[in-house]
Image 1 (cartoon, helix red, strand yellow):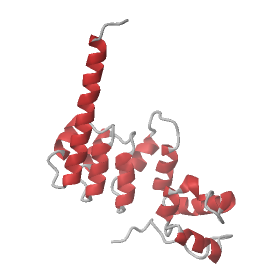
Image 2 (image 1 turned 60 degrees about the horizontal axis):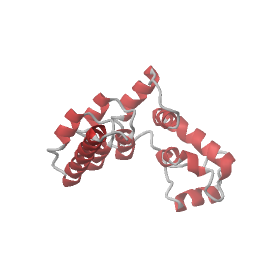
Image 3 (image 1 turned 90 degrees about the vertical axis):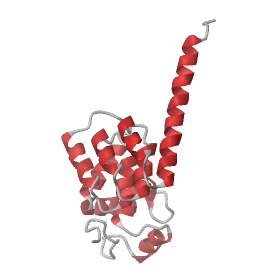
Image 4 (image 1 turned 45 degrees about the horizontal axis):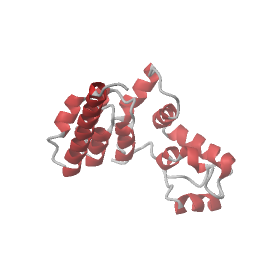
Length: 179
């Protein structure tokens, strides 16, 4: 079943002509998700500029309001998640696009419960991003350490190794005499 919210860029967006569409396609930007994920850099693409970028982002945001809100939240300084943030995250965790779920899996403010559900995602790339996320709890890493995919297991192993090294360095720094 195709994602009903991830729409191809139509010819009918005001002030976005065939030349702009050709530029976007040449850059691999074909859908509303592509536009939202590249949001901050759109205006720097030659031939797009800030005005067209704003129009494209407005159109894409109307197609996918939850993804748009989530990406805007990603660009804010860390802070408390609002109820709206949590609702958007819960919806995005079930998005049909592995690209969207992977983005959520890699974001450090994604709640532990959502990371737990994404650790069981059908796409190994999503599970690997959960394993690499610094906010992923140890019990989720333990589940991923038995994953069927070798790259997921390798990501867990690398993260656990880095955690052990960090603890070792912290202990050593406390044991060293202060000069």
